[in-house]
Amino acid sequence: MHTLKVTIGERDRLDQRMRSRIKAAQEGEDLDDAQPILNFGSYAELSRLLSPKNLELLEVISKHEPESIREAAELVDRDYKQVHRNLSELDDIGVIEFEVDGSGNAKKPKLRYDGLEIDISFARSNENVGTAAP
Image 1 (cartoon, helix red, strand yellow):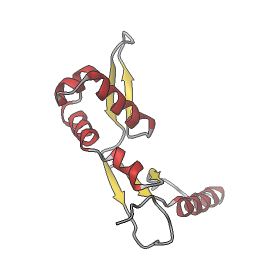
Image 2 (cartoon, rainbow, N blue to C red):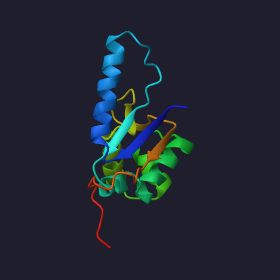
Image 3 (tube, helix red, strand yellow):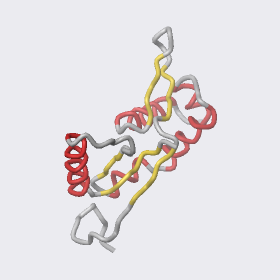
Image 4 (cartoon, one colour):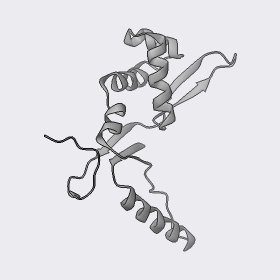
């Protein structure tokens, strides 16, 4: 299964992991086990990805494989412009991609991954990840 790991506020740890992987590659080690990682700086940024509307779109794409943004909008019974905006955001962060049809008109949304693995660590209390005060 090809999953995207989603983290929050772990830029330093990811930078260290990247440096280790670069060193391993330079030393000729096999890196086929690499899992793509998407890191958000705050919970607010993560909540955009995990909004009910985005999750509904991802599920519809997975189940119905719509041929266009318009078809995806019809499947979720939402306005085309809103769905286009949501799908464009998901494309910008690398969760989906668009496949252009032969005529160059319709953009077919496709999932890039089989699933998302959300990794939220509460162990780093000194990192500010945009938490709200109680």
